[in-house]
Length: 196
Image (cartoon, rainbow, N blue to C red; front, side):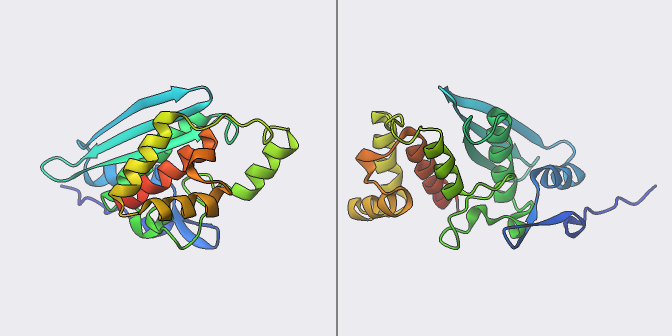
């Protein structure tokens, strides 16, 4: 009987933003190597306008399970649906230990570059939108987003003042003045913090 070869993630590490990073595809190979009968479920939770939100749940038979969330927009990626699903899956796998040490998704405060599989430079994205004239009329955050932001901020232990300060620092606006896209990014940040 052939001996099963263990997956060595160090062979697949890439550099992103100066740090080691294990792409989601390799986290998935690692998971399947160890748990070929593990369960992976993804669900498109929301697709409003050009923004998609996915939830992924990964379950180890007889063991743990984790849920990951991912959102992306058409302005950031042409294939934003696929990117959002990959982001959710990557976070669920990382929460189970597959690539966590090579994944900055759970390192809040170290940097605000939001690396998942395709790094995004928020400043460059903002500049591109301004060049296209989008910054003048962004879609305002929905009442549902604002309500959820307040709720999830409480869950991660932030006061109303701290929530306002974090929104102001990240996006130059208080919570009530956020665009739909910026509110989604802030929600995602708090979801990651809550999962960590």
